Length: 164
Image (tube, rainbow, N blue to C red):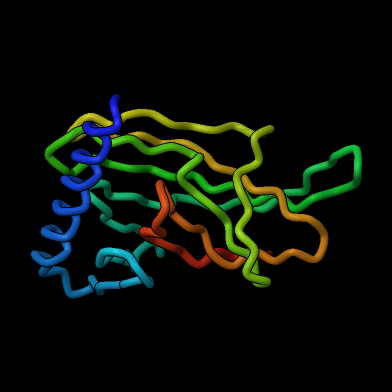
Protein backbone atom coordinates (compact mmCIF):
# COMPACT_ATOMS: atom_id res chain seq x y z
CA UNK A 1 0.00 0.00 0.00
CA UNK A 2 1.50 3.33 -0.95
CA UNK A 3 1.99 6.13 1.58
CA UNK A 4 -0.93 8.25 0.31
CA UNK A 5 -3.37 5.35 0.73
CA UNK A 6 -2.01 4.65 4.23
CA UNK A 7 -2.48 8.28 5.28
CA UNK A 8 -6.01 8.41 3.86
CA UNK A 9 -6.84 5.08 5.57
CA UNK A 10 -5.47 6.21 8.93
CA UNK A 11 -7.34 9.53 8.71
CA UNK A 12 -10.56 7.70 7.80
CA UNK A 13 -10.12 5.26 10.69
CA UNK A 14 -9.43 8.09 13.16
CA UNK A 15 -12.50 9.98 11.96
CA UNK A 16 -14.68 6.85 12.21
CA UNK A 17 -13.37 6.13 15.72
CA UNK A 18 -14.18 9.66 16.84
CA UNK A 19 -17.69 9.34 15.41
CA UNK A 20 -18.29 5.97 17.11
CA UNK A 21 -17.04 7.30 20.45
CA UNK A 22 -19.31 10.33 20.20
CA UNK A 23 -22.37 8.16 19.46
CA UNK A 24 -21.94 5.83 22.44
CA UNK A 25 -25.00 5.35 24.65
CA UNK A 26 -23.64 2.46 26.75
CA UNK A 27 -23.85 3.28 30.48
CA UNK A 28 -20.56 1.45 31.06
CA UNK A 29 -18.69 3.49 28.43
CA UNK A 30 -16.29 6.22 29.38
CA UNK A 31 -14.13 8.40 27.19
CA UNK A 32 -10.44 8.09 27.92
CA UNK A 33 -8.03 10.56 26.40
CA UNK A 34 -4.29 10.24 26.50
CA UNK A 35 -1.97 13.13 25.86
CA UNK A 36 -1.91 14.00 22.15
CA UNK A 37 -4.43 11.39 21.00
CA UNK A 38 -7.97 11.20 19.78
CA UNK A 39 -10.71 10.29 22.31
CA UNK A 40 -10.82 6.56 22.92
CA UNK A 41 -13.93 4.68 23.97
CA UNK A 42 -12.86 2.42 26.83
CA UNK A 43 -15.41 -0.20 27.86
CA UNK A 44 -15.14 -2.68 30.68
CA UNK A 45 -17.48 -5.65 30.51
CA UNK A 46 -17.97 -6.36 34.20
CA UNK A 47 -19.25 -9.90 33.59
CA UNK A 48 -15.79 -11.15 32.61
CA UNK A 49 -13.66 -8.06 33.29
CA UNK A 50 -12.21 -8.02 29.77
CA UNK A 51 -11.03 -4.67 28.50
CA UNK A 52 -11.82 -3.39 25.05
CA UNK A 53 -11.36 -0.19 23.13
CA UNK A 54 -12.69 1.09 19.82
CA UNK A 55 -9.96 2.93 17.95
CA UNK A 56 -10.36 4.04 14.36
CA UNK A 57 -13.09 1.50 13.69
CA UNK A 58 -11.19 -1.41 15.30
CA UNK A 59 -12.66 -2.96 18.43
CA UNK A 60 -9.56 -4.24 20.25
CA UNK A 61 -10.08 -6.69 23.10
CA UNK A 62 -7.38 -7.96 25.45
CA UNK A 63 -8.71 -11.49 25.93
CA UNK A 64 -6.07 -12.89 28.25
CA UNK A 65 -2.72 -12.16 29.88
CA UNK A 66 -0.28 -14.90 30.86
CA UNK A 67 2.91 -14.58 32.88
CA UNK A 68 5.58 -17.26 32.49
CA UNK A 69 9.30 -17.74 33.01
CA UNK A 70 11.53 -17.70 29.93
CA UNK A 71 14.94 -19.32 30.13
CA UNK A 72 17.70 -17.70 28.08
CA UNK A 73 21.45 -18.17 27.84
CA UNK A 74 21.83 -15.20 30.20
CA UNK A 75 19.36 -16.47 32.81
CA UNK A 76 15.62 -16.18 33.30
CA UNK A 77 13.21 -13.48 32.18
CA UNK A 78 9.56 -12.88 32.98
CA UNK A 79 7.46 -13.33 29.84
CA UNK A 80 4.16 -11.42 29.58
CA UNK A 81 1.95 -12.75 26.76
CA UNK A 82 -1.32 -11.09 25.74
CA UNK A 83 -4.01 -12.65 23.54
CA UNK A 84 -5.59 -9.88 21.49
CA UNK A 85 -8.72 -9.95 19.34
CA UNK A 86 -9.65 -7.14 16.97
CA UNK A 87 -12.86 -6.72 15.00
CA UNK A 88 -13.07 -4.24 12.13
CA UNK A 89 -16.25 -2.28 12.80
CA UNK A 90 -15.25 0.49 10.39
CA UNK A 91 -16.04 1.06 6.74
CA UNK A 92 -12.57 0.31 5.31
CA UNK A 93 -10.01 -2.48 5.77
CA UNK A 94 -7.52 -1.88 8.59
CA UNK A 95 -4.28 -3.49 9.67
CA UNK A 96 -3.27 -4.71 13.13
CA UNK A 97 -0.38 -6.76 14.41
CA UNK A 98 1.93 -7.55 17.31
CA UNK A 99 4.32 -4.79 16.27
CA UNK A 100 1.64 -2.19 17.07
CA UNK A 101 1.99 -2.86 20.81
CA UNK A 102 4.52 -1.84 23.49
CA UNK A 103 4.77 -2.70 27.17
CA UNK A 104 5.39 0.12 29.65
CA UNK A 105 7.20 -0.72 32.88
CA UNK A 106 6.78 0.89 36.30
CA UNK A 107 10.07 2.69 35.63
CA UNK A 108 8.62 4.34 32.51
CA UNK A 109 10.56 2.21 30.01
CA UNK A 110 8.82 1.10 26.81
CA UNK A 111 9.61 -2.46 25.76
CA UNK A 112 9.14 -3.79 22.24
CA UNK A 113 7.76 -7.25 21.61
CA UNK A 114 9.91 -10.36 22.02
CA UNK A 115 10.68 -11.31 18.40
CA UNK A 116 11.50 -14.90 19.42
CA UNK A 117 7.88 -15.59 20.39
CA UNK A 118 4.72 -16.09 18.30
CA UNK A 119 3.43 -12.94 16.57
CA UNK A 120 0.43 -11.99 14.45
CA UNK A 121 -0.50 -9.33 11.94
CA UNK A 122 -2.71 -8.86 8.94
CA UNK A 123 -5.17 -6.57 7.23
CA UNK A 124 -8.68 -6.98 8.63
CA UNK A 125 -11.55 -6.68 6.17
CA UNK A 126 -14.71 -4.83 7.22
CA UNK A 127 -16.71 -7.04 9.58
CA UNK A 128 -13.85 -9.53 10.03
CA UNK A 129 -11.91 -10.46 13.18
CA UNK A 130 -8.27 -11.36 13.89
CA UNK A 131 -6.82 -12.97 17.03
CA UNK A 132 -3.18 -13.33 17.96
CA UNK A 133 -0.56 -13.01 20.64
CA UNK A 134 2.12 -10.51 21.55
CA UNK A 135 4.84 -11.28 24.13
CA UNK A 136 7.28 -9.12 26.07
CA UNK A 137 10.34 -10.35 28.00
CA UNK A 138 11.17 -8.41 31.16
CA UNK A 139 14.52 -8.54 32.90
CA UNK A 140 14.84 -9.15 36.63
CA UNK A 141 13.56 -6.14 38.55
CA UNK A 142 11.35 -4.80 35.74
CA UNK A 143 7.62 -4.60 36.54
CA UNK A 144 4.95 -4.41 33.82
CA UNK A 145 2.49 -1.51 34.12
CA UNK A 146 0.56 -0.93 30.87
CA UNK A 147 0.04 -2.50 27.46
CA UNK A 148 0.23 0.31 24.91
CA UNK A 149 -1.37 0.39 21.43
CA UNK A 150 0.88 2.61 19.31
CA UNK A 151 0.62 1.78 15.61
CA UNK A 152 2.50 4.92 14.56
CA UNK A 153 3.90 7.96 16.28
CA UNK A 154 0.97 8.45 18.67
CA UNK A 155 -0.20 6.27 21.55
CA UNK A 156 -3.86 5.50 20.86
CA UNK A 157 -4.85 3.25 23.79
CA UNK A 158 -3.53 1.65 26.95
CA UNK A 159 -4.59 -1.11 29.29
CA UNK A 160 -3.43 -1.78 32.87
CA UNK A 161 -1.68 -5.14 33.20
CA UNK A 162 -1.11 -7.50 36.07
CA UNK A 163 2.52 -7.94 37.03
CA UNK A 164 2.25 -11.19 38.97
